[in-house]
View 1 (cartoon, rainbow, N blue to C red):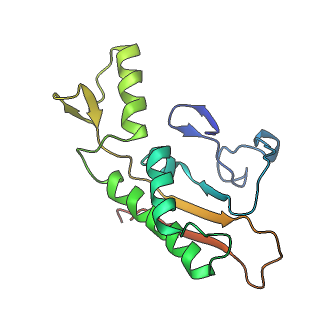
View 2: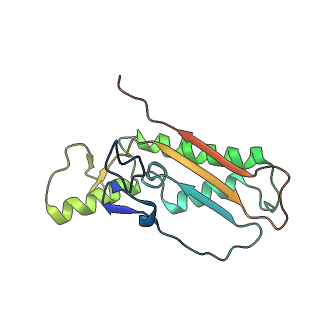
Length: 163
């Protein structure tokens, strides 16, 4: 679930002395019923703006074996890394169809304004291109017993600064 004020304006947490910020009270709290073997993928807008849910599910299914009830921490970290790498690849691909470009196409159709920073794919009638952004992903595998090691895979990659 995207937590946004409006399209391309996600809630931001920061110190109020340095920037406009959202507050912890603005966060959504969800309760889910999970079972052993379930996989939870959490990420920043850089992940979800560049990968469709089906693409995320396919990468997770490929990265984690069917008997994923018990995986090594390294396997789960590799899964998170593959998600970040795929999102990064789409983010810099001018021809990719992404959730971001799909949303921007819809917004453009509604407002009839040109979006100069997108490429138009005449074949499909969509704006194309990913959204370069910070990409952060955490993958968790639900287990029945307490793991001996931390089984969260947390990988982040910052966008390159233009200094």
